[in-house]
Length: 260
Length: 353
Ligand SMILES: Nc1ncnc2c1ncn2[C@@H]1O[C@H](COP(=O)(O)OP(=O)(O)OP(=O)(O)O)[C@@H](O)[C@H]1O
Ligand SMILES: [Mg+2]
Image (cartoon, rainbow over all chains, first blue to last red; front, side, top):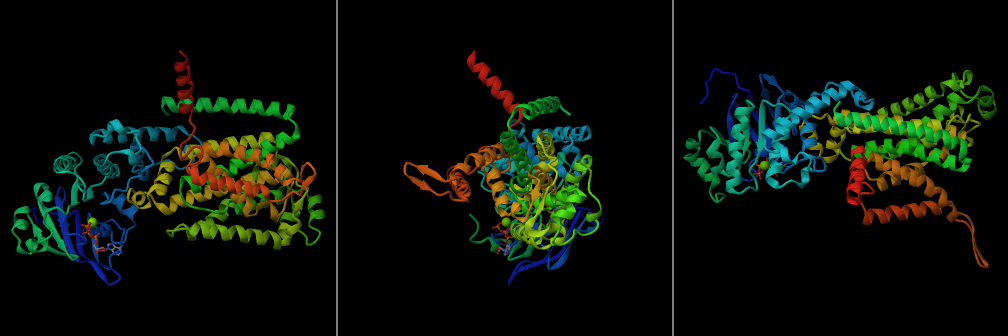
């Protein structure tokens, strides 16, 4: 456990949202501290992705608050949430398919661009200086995630594993302090999954990140997360270290029949 | 600016010089018929490239360019029409103040075109603010309605537009110098935008709105930027058009105009600015060539009467065939770049060796 008197980076307070009659997330509370690598697990349809969508402003909670770095960001639009320092990847990959790998990453730099739209229209040198600087940074980032060889490829032409990695690179390019990863290992074989988890750990250390990670295979998450929250039917049913989670009877019950 | 960008800029400026030389030769040696087609082609370039910015690059389906062109066209016509002419033209009802009290001299033509663009851009702002906040195809519906409303206004707001009779005797300021310059600089500016960080943001919106927003792109502001810029250039194109043919009337900017532009950008490739340039020229020439199919045709002893509107049928069939067999148009979403041209030339030389 972290030192209790430290201020949390992200604090979710009683988040609740319903779609029609279905309560997808109910009274969900959790705290993340700087440098954490926390896992969120639960069976299909438990409400994990919805929690991410509530944090990033995709959905507005019917009840509860999202506090980030001491600031209430509940109801912020997704682009605003990104600018305060929360980035995400998507469970079903959402790359800009027809754009190149480099361009995919460059899009994330746009929000910090200083130039007005008139500068590139008139081909002003001030714009080209800025473009040059962000290109260099984008290349460095692609180097760091091991995609330097494919910068000119169309994103949709990449193999699946590289697409996942590009999604992470693109999220990192927004300069987040908190990174939300929604099933980054989905569709990967055990070997690829292990490599990805190592990669995620390294990213956290290299970029000083806090990581919140959804995974529905319990075993994967046990390996790298220091703390795990478990959801079932929209509610948090357990939270603790991998050891505690493994032996929690409610968790075992929730996963009965779902475990492969 | 990197080395490649400097080279491209230099080549672009050389192209400009060559074009200007070409214009001076064309003005001297080409017949008026050909010059007229070239003028029309260049105006189509301005309008089509602007239209592609919102439809092809940003992926927001607008049906409004005829409305924006009408606003630009009427603005320029009213500003440039000489005072004597204003009294003659508006004989049903006099032109309203302040337009009845002044007229731009010829050296303010550029300013008039600019104001025509600004008027159209303001209209785009007005439509864009309520509709671009919503997800879904509201823009298509709203812009279609807008085009129709502008047409009704042009027919019925007689003290400003002179109704169905339109405005005649607009000084013919537009010539190849004007049209080629506007075509060139419109493409220069819009391509500059499209190749920049702003262009990437617009394309990201087209590719995946949810992801674009999650990467920090403000959807509303960027769609609005694209839409308003598109309106501006459409307005300028309208202004050029009315000072080319020296008249404006409601029938000039009906939905047919939007349909023509849609054909141009789809055939050139949605999202390819340079593709639209190529197809704008092809379209302008085809339109002239296909005039034949609307004229009476005599084969032996039989004479078939001309069928007005036949050209549109041909274009529609062309569009359908293209959609079925070649959906991405001539260029897809790719641009003709200097790099591509250089690679081609090099490739050819190497294969000859
Ligand atoms: N926009 C929506 N409208 C209606 N229902 C929704 C919406 N989003 C999610 N739901 C429902 O909310 C519940 C939780 O969905 P969610 O995607 O959060 O589950 P999950 O834990 O991520 O599941 P999985 O492991 O399959 O990804 C599901 O029953 C889902 O159908
Ligand atoms: Mg999910």
